[in-house]
Length: 305
Image 1 (tube, helix red, strand yellow):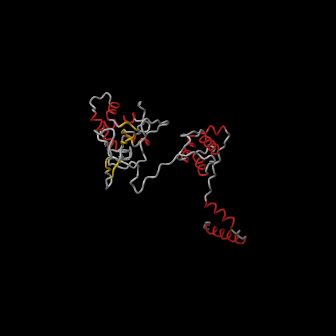
Image 2 (spheres, helix red, strand yellow; image 1 turned 30 degrees about the vertical axis):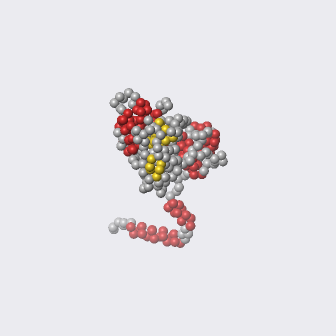
Image 3 (cartoon, one colour; image 1 turned 90 degrees about the vertical axis):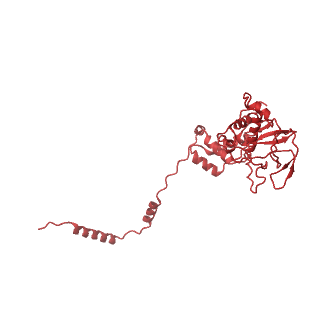
């Protein structure tokens, strides 16, 4: 199989599982990706991997490559499974770290739904592996070649070492929630009020009804997998943030005027109290004026005679 371009995420370099491996094993692990099929599978052959990743390094022996593969298994980055009379390696974190638009698989698929585990195939083992006892529980039970070495769950989680069930959470009382399922937008979809308010708040210069119509038509017509989304609200928010405002200006859209700032409640109360107040009688008003005048006369200084 021809080598493929693969993606290396920044967190790869600081993953505890990766850092626990020797430097050459890290390079071999990255090189393994290039020669896996689009499902993360590769023939379980250290000889082949050595020739693919270290073609010009005479100092890297077959035994060195076998040690690197063992380190990958010990850290839970690679598992071995048996299918169609052969052993294959599977990169455990493949689906989380490699995004391939049109995947093609050359090798038998990795049996992800199996609960059966068995230890890594010894270096001297033949291709066809006989049944071996399962040692992860208190009671040994026969395990047939068949499916998977379940060590760890992939890059970046820091869970390395120890043979575990292939199905994540199979032995746990609290299994992790299933991943979200991608669905199509409903034919009768209408813009929810909460989504509309969010759009008006983040992009007040845009017409939410026009965006909703384009959003609806686009995803109804989009073929799979582009028309399938696991979180439609997040998809709507991304659509709003990426929208071109020129389209709305060409359609004559006028953004709603901002709301006037609310008046101070204390001032509103003063105005209400003034309307409810009883007018002062004229006699009382005249008496107050006379008292003020008399007080003023007392304060005015007189010239001494």
